[in-house]
Image 1 (cartoon, rainbow, N blue to C red):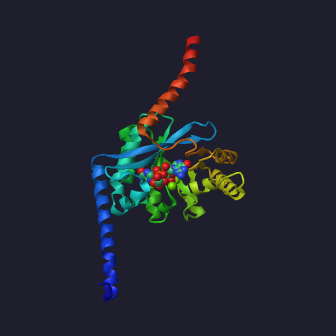
Image 2 (image 1 turned 90 degrees about the vertical axis):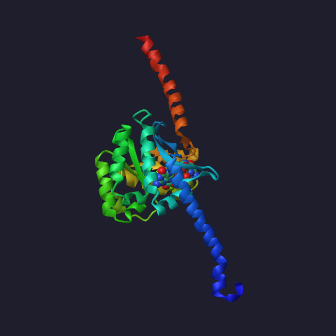
Image 3 (image 1 turned 120 degrees about the vertical axis):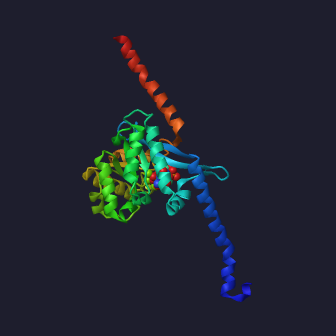
Length: 289
Ligand code: C2E
Ligand code: MG
Ligand code: MG
Ligand code: MG
């Protein structure tokens, strides 16, 4: 009972702890089932070239439609997938599915795939990616891997070796969520990053009246550009943010201002519409000859 002091108060929490462990076990089991049934889904968000206003590629974003709980976002299940090691088979599935989908697109469009730090602890990472490329038939240059600064924190030699090997094959490497981590500037020089993605939190703060956030964006773009890396702004939601980022010579934009992540079929529909509208003038040209 509660009167029996320390032990009583310990017992008070037991049912809650039990519930929590039970919920985690259920979620782990459900993730395994979803994976086995091939029922995870990828959504795709366009990455827009700031100069042309056209998509340069799409980022694959994992979605879980749970039969009872409905749509579950990655932030809610990727941490548990990482803890349980399930991120390895899930990550393999993501890589294969994303590359296969990109094979249906015009071949100047890139596909960006997020990688967890945990995936770098697997010796199979490079061969999985090489396998996914071979299987889909897409060129290595079309694949862009998005990694966060945390990958450089543990066993950075092994991570470096894997990234260097992939980079040597032509795969592009993007540093995701830049500005939220703790990495030193020298790390940015050491790792073969082609692109820096400016975190949404900085982009969010951008407005005509927030001079400081504009200066931060300017500094990041100049710094990246001087190291020969391109820049992408994440989470662009307003025309004002777009105008500022353009003025600061940011190369690419991504965010709800342009589009939300959409399913594979919608991406294909969008491309079809686009191709149709492009075809008209060339048909007219062809008829003139
Ligand atoms: P991320 O890689 O930084 O992806 C961008 C996130 O920002 C996505 O959230 C996207 O839907 C959201 N976003 C895009 N534009 C806007 C905007 O204008 N406003 C706002 N508020 N949000 C925007 P999502 O899909 O929930 O993914 C969250 C994170 O989960 C990703 O962040 C990534 O770190 C991780 N993730 C997603 N898919 C995968 C995956 O296949 N594997 C791994 N390892 N991680 C993944
Ligand atoms: Mg990303
Ligand atoms: Mg990001
Ligand atoms: Mg993020």
